[in-house]
Length: 251
Length: 251
Image (cartoon, rainbow over all chains, first blue to last red; front, side):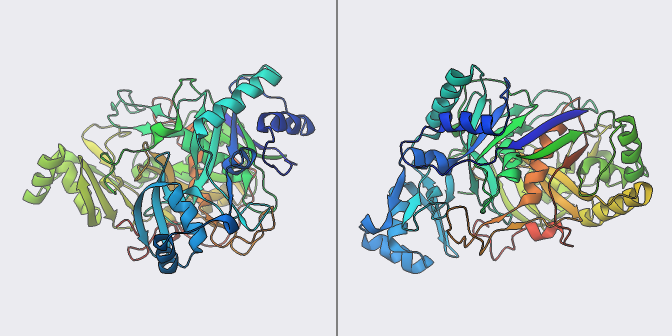
């Protein structure tokens, strides 16, 4: 019997610019009477990371271009919001059915460049993705190791929509201390067949497992422990999860 | 503290045509000394379901068309394998970089119509998706209820690749006793913002959580319990998870 536990920490306080997420996590762990173990994986909703880093924008301060205005009209979105999205984008991938799909400055392909109106304590404020989510994950991991002595892995997550299938699911946008893939190529499956192409994006699956207790609503749980896996601690990052435009057959 | 457990059942025997998956699961539960609880969600790898239903093909019996031969040459695949894929397809969505992405007879958009060469006890045999995965899920659920008295939810899963991101992740291809979505539209998030568009594909996230203990290799665990969620038992099916071509902006 193999068992993985997904543990959502209750009572995480509201986060504001300058807050130290690592310190907050350690305090909330104590309140929840949960002790970290080596190889625990902490999944952290990107919003609290961005807010602590001040990576937010106030819509009323945004000056928008006529291009943003045009896209806003076409998609039914606030042109100031569109401007923030464009500022976070390297490339527009598709604009259709009121969706704006872009390649972000990091290289992620997602709606609205990951810019989010919700979960902001100020309705006038929007929350961006962290500027460098892998670095944010590394810093939080190092801080937690400093405070507790325990080396955990850290995933920073965001919910993304996807082609072909309805609904959003959680994905890893930042990673530290975890190989995002489990690679079965060349291994035998349980019937003896040598698998040629199975590489599982385990970091995204861990993000999904965590979302099950995170929720998005009032009862939001921004930090979740996934326990019982044996993450290999290879120094890869979340960008490895992103297809290049050349290898992507749907761009 | 919110907790979800992901429990992989050890020692599942090899499955052949005519085997009763529900009965096998109940026997394996006993061997693992695990008792089912109401609201448990069973995630079952589609391969054992297809094999029990005889939904496999022997490549040496397949006669292929010159179209299959041409695609085989273009993608480096066995033309007999390509023929099986085409037979399971409603439409070819894209052929590029050695990938054959189709819309299956069920409506799923995935590589090779979900036809799989691996995990088959016979290297000459390929495993298809179940013909009607929602119905398969319903039958297994009813059989387990009959044998144990416990009403669980059932997800039949498969691993799919995806645009934009590398690696495969598990998704739900058949569902019984579970609403595949968690709908936050109109609810307030924890900052008081009313969310307008957040619908989470929770069935896919549950499939992902299960895959973490399923693995794909020698140690394959085809049946996993996800415990601690409160699935709403709406009678929806896995086809709800599939975008129509009209709403899909990447087809």
